[in-house]
Length: 64
Image 1 (spheres, helix red, strand yellow):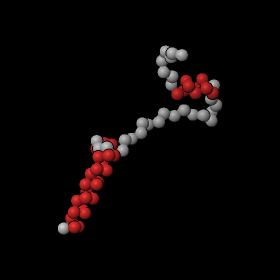
Image 2: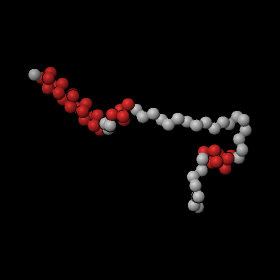
Image 3: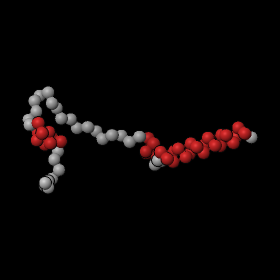
Image 4: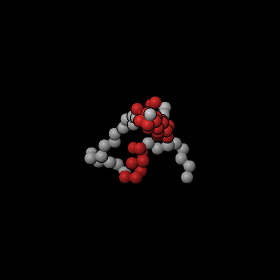
């Protein structure tokens, strides 16, 4: 079946459950905030690699 347009959450609810009573309230949620790390433009793999480099440098420092 092809839709002419996407349905809103309210329209979907009405199609599934019919009209709602006073106990049900539709709310608009704010978009999730991105974490600080994702704002830095670094991936988890890059962060792991940098951490390994710091550990290796610390081991070299202790051996000297």
